Length: 95
Image (cartoon, rainbow, N blue to C red):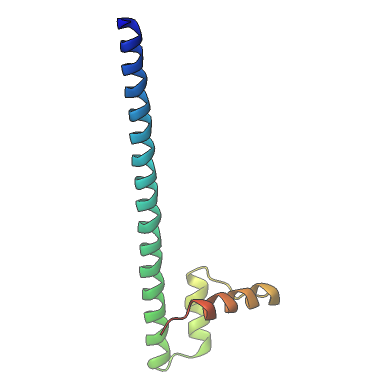
């Protein structure tokens, strides 16, 4: 009877440890994803602010295209991809 009691306690302890490990992993991964999303948003906000400044202070299209190429950004050439992107943007606009 004592052997069964010890085995049950150890089994419950391992199950609780595995559940805690899973919960911690889930929390950590979720926080990492949120942090990456926040960093991306900050980067794109800075990017948009820079483009806005270039336009405001008389930057021509060539200057803006040069800046975008330096950031390794390229124009979307595929019409289907461009349409999907535009649909995604219009769906996510919130005023």
